[in-house]
Length: 532
Ligand code: ACM
Ligand code: ZN
Image (tube, rainbow, N blue to C red; front, top):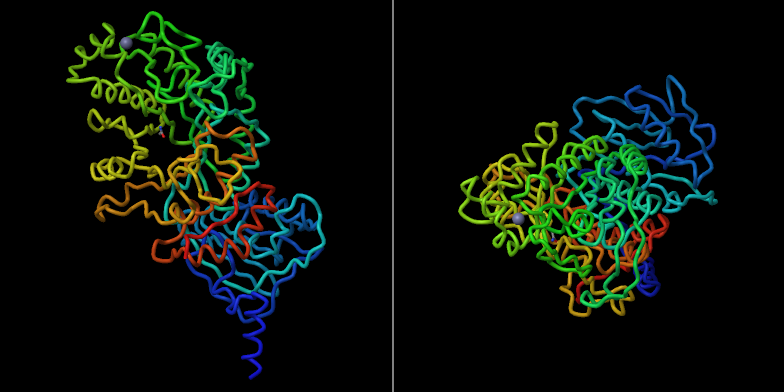
């Protein structure tokens, strides 16, 4: 009788009838066993210590807990409240986290795993832990044992500062939010038609001329101009080093992208002689533009090699992205230099020439000890030796490449395109009424390894959400389009496919995940559901 009464009251008050099956952790961990004991309470005077290889993560833990709680854990030897233990049996990026009334133990084989244990630990605390200023709180964590490791090694987000530039501080906020969701790759799209955003010391014109623009398509009609010149905006090498170091502490690898041969109009504004045509059309319009780097001009190769020299000196990660998408062959087909190059290389068409062009830079990067990745057009002329593929026009190209033993990142349009319409009713940031819908539940539905035979699955590095910025004016639009969809990308990348369930994800996000995004200071879009 009493339980009936409670159930009726719960229904009236919209209290969920059942407690959450697991704490509201996003991405969902592999295994969660709730403890029987009392919760742990964070207090002044508690200590942190353990294996010296985790010294960086001990400091990260202290700095993670301090801003909201005002509590500094004291580093100590011996038996400490928070303990970091080296456990070689834990998988790469994996961890075990045990919370009891007495203390917290983190086990990992390497620092990245310990870092992810800290991110999980943060989600066991009230969402206020994400605040950057002190707040009164009851800092308790339930007794629990969690064992966890990611499904994929590449859990990425692509950001595009070319169409609309954003500064270093704003980028750091996104890196913080990504790390909180165990996303570990920032694909930084640094060059495009509308802006060259990376300082190149040997060729300063690239950023100084290519980073400025004469005019911008009027918001948001890509074929009309506002006629307002924008001064050069770009990241200096010093700023890039600062971002790379900041990301490294968050275990985020940055993959810089230098677009070639297409999406190069900004570079051609600086160096018009590298276009095929004598009088190139350097329109500031958006879209797929015909003016691309000439593949028959040795100076194109020389300039791009100089650029890559500086890129590899700035970015220590294993991959450099060389673009390759949306490169119409109109100019190449009419260019004597490109035609001669095609003949010299024995290519049967310009698609093959593009594949050879990609192979040239793949080999150049290999000579510097780096891997190269490109958009899936680079395999239109055959699989380019030594290049990984980013599959964006669906997954077919990725499947083909993985079957042939090429590493692949799946980022199929539209599900991984987080600039697309997310079907939020009355969306104030949706400027294109008939934009292909890509609501969060559609994003959540993809399995990056679907359709692949078992032997090809190891070649899928992971997945990525892409945030193109033609229709983004400010940080608030960017946050809105990226979050909460980036949390769905994070869960697809981390959680075993068999444990993923939309309703379960929706529940964790609506109870806790959305509040965390707000506490992180993000202007996240509301969480939506498919129509029931
Ligand atoms: C792309 O969306 N053009 C890769
Ligand atoms: Zn040419």
